[in-house]
Length: 409
Image 1 (cartoon, rainbow, N blue to C red):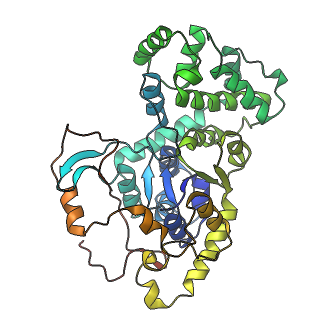
Image 2 (cartoon, helix red, strand yellow; image 1 turned 120 degrees about the horizontal axis):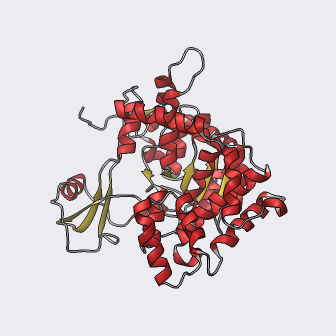
Image 3 (cartoon, helix red, strand yellow; image 1 turned 180 degrees about the vertical axis):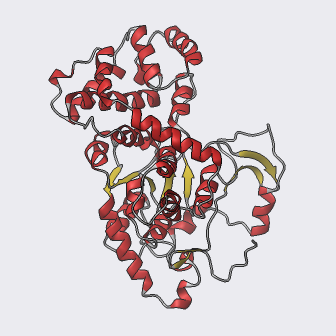
């Protein structure tokens, strides 16, 4: 519930054990696949004295949003689909993979089971890691350590870019945008773009064939999302070659990749200096960059505000007493709600007005348990959409669900 927020690991790590409850409660989290990979990679890092890598990852997993978090589809898959003619909606909505179509007594529905990412973070809280996850973490750390950013100087010339005239990050973005808006781009440059985008080799010839049959339009017209990702990549390598981004920090390559997911959020939250410098250049109208420490301070204040409530009230679960931020609040969180959820300060509850008909638990169970339907309706516009998440009853000092809610093992 609340504005759709994309965040990086630096922000979540900065929070205390209670503050993520309010971030999770007042924002809908887009879980970037890179966040999952970055967190897992900490299994192979050296950690501070007195902690194990497993404990370090467990501390991050402990803060992971649960109530309203959804993993976004991996950007490479979206780029490939876009280049093959499958439109990618860049409408600041989370793009969730999968979903099981069912025909229930409530009509056509799509049921999303608990995601593998959410299941993994739940296990990691208890330091339960699969062998394949440890292997993946080791490989990721090896690839990051072996990355030679200095070799990236060779990339801009392949696209006809000279970095000599680049004096700022804004200049780097403009030079990158010229490539994706170029009419009559040479085929060899299009091939270089597919390589940089990570398109599998077996798909490059079909994509080139489809593009040439269409008359070799600009990449921005042909595949808008792939063009957006390529712009970010070229921007990074131009800025790197010019010394505007450090070549000595391999993690910069990972940090810049978070920007691929900007079309699928309303707010981007980070405590990272690189993000603070680069993200505003790629935001669209109405999108906001929020500096992590600023939001953390507001979450700290909200935590203190709600901590003053009677114990009996708090035992009812946060949804029972904080369905919206405090109505007279003047704060960052309230400002973002004003921007993306207008009307929430008025009498009544904006969440009730916008959520549609309510369902009983029995009705919801019947939808989830309905048999799968392979055909019969358009899954992009179901009558009912069910999203399942793993949620702990208590997180930090707070009951996320009523303390007396009966739960099985």
